[in-house]
Image 1 (spheres, protein in one colour):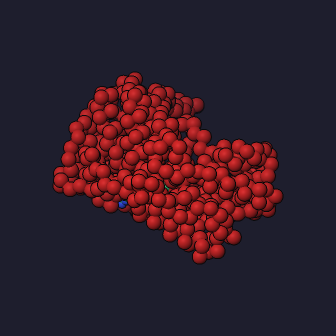
Image 2 (cartoon, helix red, strand yellow):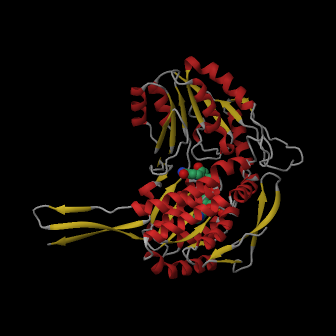
Image 3 (cartoon, helix red, strand yellow):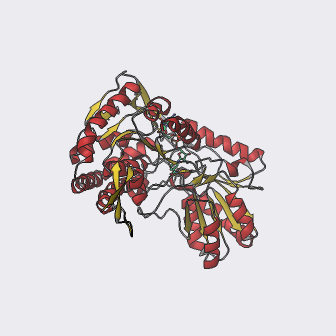
Length: 479
Ligand code: NDP
């Protein structure tokens, strides 16, 4: 099935008529074609967005809200179709796509459809000066949204929904590795009555199509989720043009387990926070630190549970771990397992490719637990972004805090303890944008989302996203 660009409300082939292969990770086979869009296609998308902007930015909040909520309803009505498409494109279990990814994409539109009607601006009376200040929150114009392959529609819509809710028009590029559900979104937007040109989706490689978006002098803001190296490159390209940037980048998140936690809940959740989506979630807790008094018990119980996870074809309901997203990614993760061995890490379970019957060319890997002897080894410092976690013991709160913070990233951290004072001490000192205590990946869309250090700049979520996608203009009236 061929994917097409969605420009000015129409599906279009790329101007060059050049195409890329789309692979199914579960089988390793090519199952479709993707436009290899050029600068010309990005320019066409920009022109469509620019022409739609005057009208869309003046569309009432009620009308914008109504359309966003309609898109959400149509996604819900097409849940099965979208979930199957997402699973086929990405390799994730279809159940995960059905229960998490697609419902969340629908929630993104519903949430921002509602949030925009509650987005109030500030006013300040300058007492004694007979003056009143108020702040206008104006849409920026044409904005660019670029998203990765791990949660394809979920992260794509997490950017698009607030951008259009705030009155902007969008040129968006999903990952070329997983374009399918973004492609299908076009027809949903048309059916929901989104005016032509408000959302334009251009498919292609990051280095050409993505690059044309970030280099475009009149695309005034870029919301990007992806790797740290790409984020740094975007920041360099954007800086001379003073573009507004939101960068959600990589992570190497600590999962810190104290002996006083609710053990069973912790154990169950830790399996999920390590291996959900084949470990390909920026929020996965890939470095597990366990208080020494329960370390041996945890190690035995955790490895037993991990060994019981079923690696299989994503469409089977019994599958816990589907396929990794691509062959190069599988090879990258396997390389890290070799590095772990060279660094004297012990592979407690996993570490090998899996041959799934009838799908021997799929990109399957056993969930892997590595016991490391130092927190400074490469597998403990570098983002692997696959079904691989490290574990090691710790003795004191200070020790674990130091190890948790001693990485270049700072996206999220998970803490397991029932001690309130320790919770507060640790939450204050962990270098992360998000701290979960006694849970993982519990999301409330009103809360700020993002990281510190090499995990990014800026926050998404709630009014933070609407602030990003608007310019504040203060008006001071002397009366
Ligand atoms: P990449 O950085 O490789 O790609 C992300 C997106 O950027 C893709 O659409 C890619 O296109 C595009 N891109 C690549 N090069 C350029 C360029 N020069 N100009 C503009 N766009 C470009 O990341 P991955 O897709 O590999 O995603 C995995 C990464 O994303 C991990 O590091 C993960 O931690 C991070 N991530 C962060 C999250 C967060 O919220 N902080 C959430 C989810 C993931 P193409 O795919 O076609 O190359």
